[in-house]
Length: 339
Image (cartoon, rainbow, N blue to C red; front, side, top):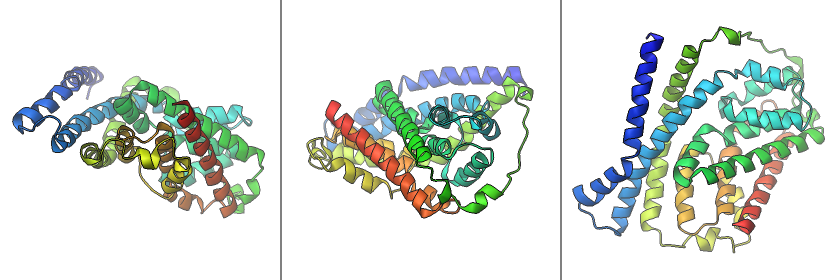
């Protein structure tokens, strides 16, 4: 496809996006109360309306943001990221690594090659862990869903606290000098280096990267979004008001650590867990407890820990999980006190 035609199609698509997005609520109301003929206030009616309204809204937001972030990511290949972090020391490196983690492709399956590449390039261990913590926890899917369901303040709050956890946790791991708990063979290998001339990539090709990101990411997570919103719709319609306050309210002192303990062994991505989180808040759960639960589910993935066992000894894995979990618990208590 020629560049000019491509940009025209994208422009038309954006106009359609705007038109559809701002009509979703009206369509949801019309379908629920006029076509289905359900009475306002009924549990079934509220559950159905919640589902019809949230699914297209979240998918539209996700498509737009993933496209934009896909273009941004084209400027940060794994090789370039390693080069940027290679000569950075503790703290400054932790900050930069955490920020880069937001816009750099990452999933549990890529934990080992990224870890090996960083270590081989001379990136300090603590800086590497800041990146590994930030990348899955503060990704565009999580931020888009939070923005769409809760607004920009909650999304910014989540991003800020996630960055603090990644920076501080990586810094502590670096100061503890835990390199001896990395498997010895990791330091003996030389990973293949791929040289990429960033200047040869045109903006049209970067737009293609954004379109590919939409195709890949949305295709992978839309099912989780639908399931998550479906579960949330059920809770929204049928769980009594303030029911969750007795289990996850700020007055229940043990709710934060228990939420983290439950969340750590669970495995879900942001697309599946955030719609449920939204309804937990509506039903009386406190913000700090819910954020702690969400961060532990997304940021401390059990499959990731199992994969990292191939390159890390158990002592370092336990230190990693423990430090991050403590940071999440502290954040949860702070927000329960403030909000």
